[in-house]
Image 1: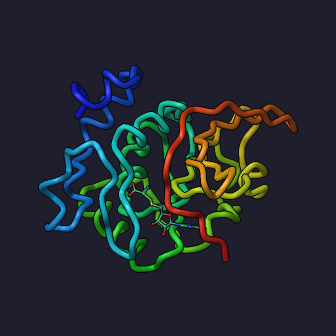
Image 2: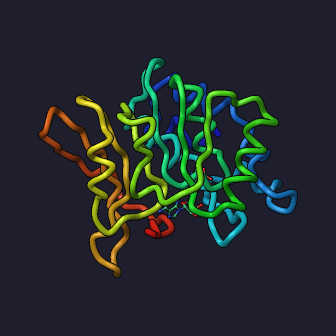
Length: 201
Ligand code: SAH
């Protein structure tokens, strides 16, 4: 994965490459999907959802630039895979999932594999998770029509948020990294992506 899928496609941060190498993606898949674990694509998990493509996970984390003391929020736990990788690069990860069955399964997987610094919560992540805010890093794994204001509010001064934004129903989504400086928020576009929709409520 590191040599063939990540390094040649723009993942240059050695810490991110190390974290990707250390997390067994197959453990986050059902037995039926395991033989596909090292293919460079999104794969089906329960509840009609997907585990993201490894390259996309790595590029999102690289863009979010987590530091060892950071607390990160992830919206859209899914299998728990991206949260596991992120947890290797920061102090703590709070990850929110709106499907209770997925949250429970991810939580079990993370516990079994010893990812002790990840907390899985059930809820609508478009409201963020105010109890532990603010966050230096926010990663959103589902596409929003616009950026949820609560998430911007929960970024620290200097905080980074990586989020796929659906600009039109016909077009791929625009993966963006937002940077907050005081009350000022700016973003740059990374590349087009296809994520499942962020479902509110
Ligand atoms: N990061 C995941 C992939 C997530 S797929 C992984 O590594 O496996 C996107 C997930 O976002 C789905 O599980 C979906 O149920 C969840 N989701 C969609 N809308 C949400 C919302 N408003 N709040 C929290 N989770 C949401």
